Length: 363
Image (cartoon, rainbow, N blue to C red; front, top):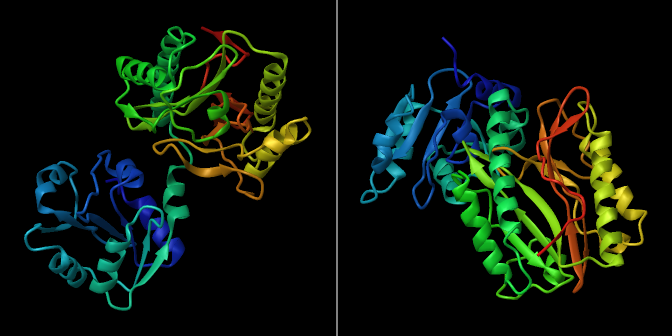
């Protein structure tokens, strides 16, 4: 019989700790194919290097949790009583001296509750090792991610077909979100970015009640979720027309994006990809307007390892998916970003994103 905790047990043994703790989030979702909220209520799964796992679960979630087919002892608690006694009972049932946790996910009060229940417990941040189990995608995961990308691209095509001079950024954002759900999205990957002209020069801009004008760059960074996976796509359009300077900026970013594809294959490092991409921007007249690294890993979470940046010498394996998203951001004038979702293969790479990226005038 297959042990679904085998990967996590191996991580625990490699780290030299007694067990690994998971809390609701993308690692939990990958393991159990189920999503739970966090809110104010702690939920913790502890997977020992050897032996049966244990779980601490809010009583109101017991029926939902039972559907997971969990193999170990469950300690539940109610709001009216609090969770302290449940942590104490769990610690008595499964004594531990060391525990690896998800450093970017576990909340401080849960950390403190574990430390109080296990006096002297050595708690290790194993975010990299635990989340690293998600690095190489399976064929089924790549298929789910591709579905998220395709529906997102269909939504983008529908949206830009409606864009006209005088529409506001917020109105375009509303069209985009509606189109995502109409095309089958189960949620948004993140809050969509729809930004024109100088607003597009802020990499994480928010849509405004400001009308777009002829000649504006219109940057759209967005994605829909499907079957647990998140698309992340950016395209920059020009409204009405694009002047020579707009062409120059756009061409520079596009050449940087293409440079990333040329060097990507299994065995290269995140540093090498970023260096190839950013070097194109640095050699241009717009070198002062670089604000971001090349990209980040993509999967269940919209930002996950590996981070595509200089100094990160992590070797990329086949099955890794990352975003290739160079950009130039000229304050109060223009922002251009082109973002593709890239699958690393043994012989090179595949762009999961298929939406055209030649300079396009709309409206």
